Length: 255
Image 1 (cartoon, one colour):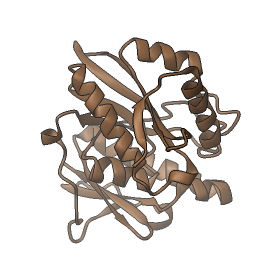
Image 2 (tube, rainbow, N blue to C red):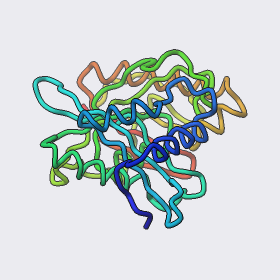
Image 3 (cartoon, rainbow, N blue to C red):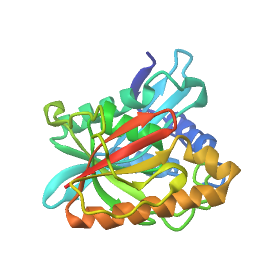
């Protein structure tokens, strides 16, 4: 396993900026510059990387520390893994390191966001890590970005909460209830917004690849899932979990 440690040099921070550009594109407007990586680290944030034996950065995690509702919290703003290191579970290892660092600071909860349409992140966040989907925000970072991973898509996001204490982790969802009504089905088909205790919301297998090949289809997924989440969550439903499958996966909403 690569060595995970805090950034220690200007070269570390420059390598992080380069990995951001590799991951999200040279013109990515949300890039965190080297100076802010340093400032965040000096004010209680976490800026850490996974490094190969030859010193190459294989991944990084970046977050800031602040106060929410009178309690110290941490916001994990960015995480990326180099394409050469995919499949090594570095994302989980970096998150675990971040959690350990937050524990030493007396922080109980870590927040971050992810796109609900990214099935692999839903599985990672909700099933493997035991985080919870706390809130759905429409166009959180704007109506579109210039990132090749986002395309011309509104940046709707789930806000995730992750307990620093592993004993408080959510239990993974393994199976869906029989006869589950789908508010969003295959091919972004919009189902009826039924009044039921449990409702399913489908997502595609790879929204980034779909956006690159058929942006109109990707946008249909965005607006169909937005319709479902913004209808049910204000009614008291919560995201119980996510079940992945070959075609993508299904969120289970429970009341």
